Image (cartoon, rainbow, N blue to C red):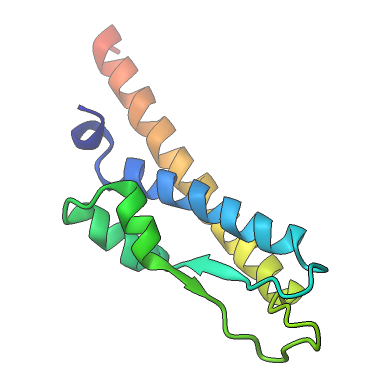
Length: 115
């Protein structure tokens, strides 16, 4: 029922939450030697989920290592400016998706109350 009720927004919210976790991990490991920054291809994962892939499978297949512009000498590929920009963009998308879901719930509540 959740998929038909919220449409693509439920899947998008789940993917955005997972991507926030990956980006947060990148930022937290910015000083870890040898750490390889990763990101989730949001569009690719969402497309896979709309085609019936399980969330874990879609996310796993869409997770990629970042190619740094200026690799560090210790092998760490986290670039803070890139990570912060991606985090901010994803956070805005998360909030917008959450607002869409909240609006849908409010509409359903009004319909049930007969307003």
